[in-house]
Length: 407
Image (cartoon, rainbow, N blue to C red; front, side, top):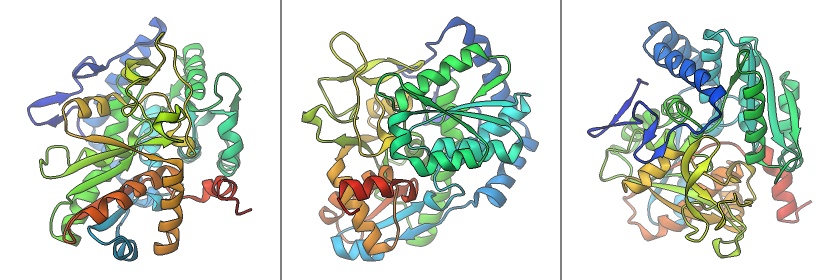
């Protein structure tokens, strides 16, 4: 982790927080000093060996890093074609990749003297990770969550409360992640002096996309080394689901300069892009186009008047109208490509991985598995697919049982 991670000859983001034409800061004037303070504190921490050592120690002794890479032998045999390997972020403490960023930012908040943590969550995993890190470091944690997401993620709501966090229901708008972020930002504007906004994905105003990427880049750094040790070479394809984009940017970052490694992000196709009920920012040519949401410029699902569209996904964590600005940049530069998996495809992949490998994935991660299921049979048997399994599926069992009518 460094101040600016070099990509070829280009430093991204630049000093203003732009990834090409994407990124930047679009926030109320009252937040600009706080963002300047945060940027300076982050760079200072990244240069401090003591901070880096403490973070590394917690990753090893608390988070459980490195997480392993698992060869999905039976899934590979079932599909034919390419060998499928899974980067097991589901085995990180608290059950998903979100803890990597939460621990890093919570340490930074404590270093800055901020005792009150504000967070937002969709699927609940970032809320759980924020509550976990806050409990560990003795910080006061407040998590905003849409009531629609609360209803479909009850286990995570209980976990957050058990960890000592206050879960604040959001009734406005679509009552999902977009609206939870709105409320979290309002809280931060009101309490900017005393509070730290622990943003969960690689979006928002600078420096958040950069910080979240850097804290999550441990995923790709480990996976790159592990797959070479296991398979003797780099993968042909890396696949990850993309909501805001933190798990995917964490995986992609280590491979972005490798011309022979294809990077594939999988958006939520919902009931199909043609239905309008989805969260496919890049894959809907009618509604997905550049715009500003939650402090950053990226691709946004919006109508002809620029109004933000409601989204849909069976997975709460992918149910978001925008995407991290670095993903928009990678797509523009043709360093990464983005496709979709529908609800039905994700549910099928969820069952397939569970029954063939004994691994129950998060519904978010099942979207990435669904893309591997499509691709593997079309590739030669000596090809390698690396899938980031961003989280485990305990939190989604009620949703899956309802969708599959198993209850």
